[in-house]
Amino acid sequence: MALTKPRIIELLLITTVPVMFLAEQGVPDLKLVLLTCVGGYLSAGGANALNMYIDRDIDALMDRTSQRPLVTGMVSPVECLVFGITLAVVSTLLFGLTVNWFSAWLSLGALLFYVVVYTMILKRRTSQNIVWGGIAGCLPVLIGWSAVTNSISWAPVILFLVMFFWTPPHYWPLSMKVKDDYARVGVPMLPVIASNKVVAKQIVIYSWVMVVVSLLLTPLGYTGWFYTAVALLAGGMWLWEAHGLQNRAKAEATGTKLKEMRLFHWSITYVSVLFLAVAVDPFLR
Ligand code: HEM
Ligand SMILES: CC(C)=CCC/C(C)=C/CC/C(C)=C/COP(=O)(O)OP(=O)(O)O
Image 1 (cartoon, rainbow, N blue to C red):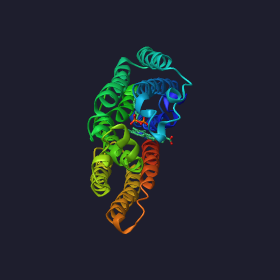
Image 2 (image 1 turned 180 degrees about the vertical axis):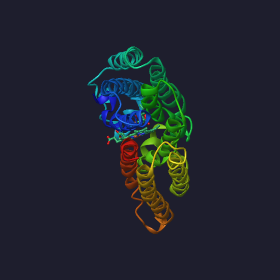
Image 3 (image 1 turned 60 degrees about the vertical axis):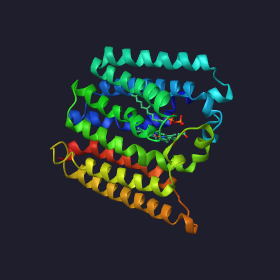
Image 4 (image 1 turned 45 degrees about the horizontal axis):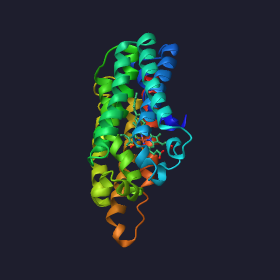
């Protein structure tokens, strides 16, 4: 369970199931929802296990990850590798045989993107690692839509982009807090190589783009007034917090506390609230 990072998968599924309601414009087949959640859990769980296998060297050296099963020795590297590969195979077959092969390839693609492109290539090489690596975390949105429709359309692409622009403001605050850990193991997270002021400015820019993109669903006819009201309210509160972080970063020299974790925690609440509105909106139109 620990190898699969279950709490992160909870939110990944929260970005998947509402999109199934949106695709269905109502209540989707509940067996399909269950199969998609099980497949998604196994796929993201396999991805996270393989990420832990690859990162076991640096996870042993960072405080935040020092209690992970491969670091404490509770699980051996080979067991973790076999576990991750097994989940990758089982999840792809489960999607292919019980949902559809389009979703199966999207799921395997997300897993490979996260394990190879993010974890093996980008993470230790560039400060843009989580910007592009974040694409893996946006794919569950497309999987939710394709599980119901066996296709893609503008609605899931817009929500994919919301998650894409959501990722840096989600993660850079946390990496601001633990940047010494990342510096020690040589992972060039943006806060390691740029000042908090620069990172905070980037977070504000990504936040504005995320909020604007989130409002495109209604003009394109996919959602109604309820979703729009939630997206405006939650987006406004997000921008307020992002500008607050930027102001605190500017005033840090005078002893102001950064309080960066506020935005990190809010990033998780925002996704939950926004996607809940996506699921409820079809019933209020
Ligand atoms: C490349 C993209 C992402 C990166 C680098 C990232 C990074 C992280 C890290 C390092 C943590 C702390 C976990 C820990 O210390 O154990 C975290 C927490 C979390 N992330 Fe992200 N994340 C990304 C994308 C996502 C996505 C797409 C979702 C869900 C839609 C998500 C949901 C969460 C949740 C719910 C937590 C809190 C977990 C807890 O409370 O233990 N993250 N993220
Ligand atoms: C359907 C499917 C396979 C989706 C994949 C989505 C997925 C697994 C997203 C994970 C996002 C995440 C927590 C990245 C952190 O990696 P990290 O290595 O930076 O974090 P760490 O330092 O805590 O290990």
